Length: 317
Ligand SMILES: Cc1cc2nc3c(=O)[nH]c(=O)nc-3n(C[C@H](O)[C@H](O)[C@H](O)COP(=O)(O)OP(=O)(O)OC[C@H]3O[C@@H](n4cnc5c(N)ncnc54)[C@H](O)[C@@H]3O)c2cc1C
Image: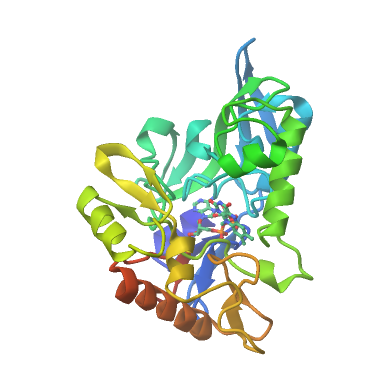
């Protein structure tokens, strides 16, 4: 079907779980393809590593649960993320100190430009923070993803401070895989980051904005702008760049949890500042109106421009 749509030039929308797209109120004029392939297969096994092939439509969290049960370490901290496995390379899905770029060994794609199936090693996927060559690029359809995991009953070193605290260990310690998974699920549920149809705080795309990455000069400017309100949480990266907490900026710009409050169609989640939620009757126009208000408020207060994390289809912020 993808081949046929590519031949006719018909606009094509690939959709799997739909958990990271915002679609305009007028819908999508073209062919939408739902990716529903399933399957997990061990394709090579050595004492120190396994290569596991997962079909694109396979629900991500089912795969993570299976790795924990089987004793395959490497993705346990990515528990509870909605959507499909084939979408995880698109924005290099990450949480709680892990991202999929660390364990993906290759991605099998259908290349719509050349009309062929290719295996792309991880080094060719352009992985970065919530980014890859697949994001905002209609050329590649992910068919399956190969993960390189470790046979182990313990997790990798716990990197994320909040997770280590909740597990009662020091950052860098290892914990049983099941403990890592359960603790991540509990932390995520407390923030409305595990889908629950009865909890409107989870009716979101997860984080609406990415954490901005500032160069050294912009970071110093931000520190000056926030003098007196406490230093913004920042994580140093390569080349003197600093990744800054978007949630902190949004909150300090006056958009706290639950904003704007009252009986409204869309609002910030009452549990997480980064999640913009539909309270039941919201439209995309209303959601994006709220996103614009927040983006402009942060820019005016701190001079930092926030960028949306989800893929916007037939709409823009
Ligand atoms: C409550 C909640 C919490 C979340 N938490 C996190 C988190 O902690 N970390 C994180 O990184 N993300 C998080 N997300 C975002 C989302 O779950 C992930 O991005 C997920 O990988 C999207 O999967 P999906 O199958 O729903 O993709 P979709 O929303 O269906 O698609 C997303 C994009 O990928 C493209 N795409 C999907 N499948 C394919 C394919 N096989 N080939 C080519 N393109 C494809 C689509 O065209 C679209 O552009 C969260 C979302 C929600 C709702």
